Length: 190
Image (cartoon, rainbow, N blue to C red; front, side, top):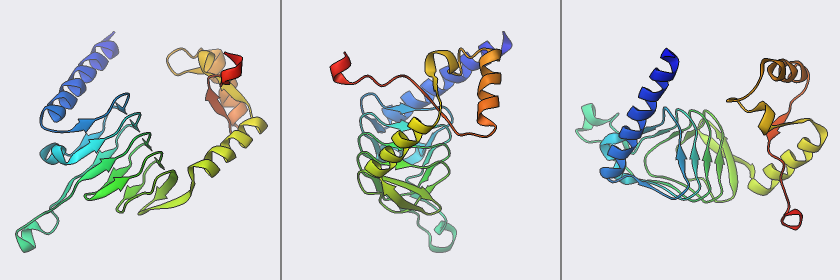
């Protein structure tokens, strides 16, 4: 019970935090999700824009200023951060000032983005570098999914997974990789 109350308080605080940033100029497009723990430079949030259909995973940091030289030079660097439509930023990605992430880009977990990421690409690392095209990345995972089990989301999602299904997943993943998701339905099947 206490866990539920704490969770509700955290969600309320985060919703308030996001509303405050938007009021101060942060731009967030339609159907975009900024997950818990993200830090969107509150002092310069008006320099940050996030397009439509984006996901910022937990602990993503968008930092539109760099005050590292302030004590020495008396000024700080600032720059716009633009996350274009249909982007995914993995857990703990850090985006520094003056960076644009092109449409349909994925940035891997833990990456530090110091330079622009082109459209339709997948980038990772510190500093983040393009490692493949979005098309190649999707092709690879579609092929891998055919070779490995895909756990149905309806039975194995975090909110509803049973102890029996947890054990089944743990056992399978001991020597395999896998996927979890809903069945993709082609337009002709609808």
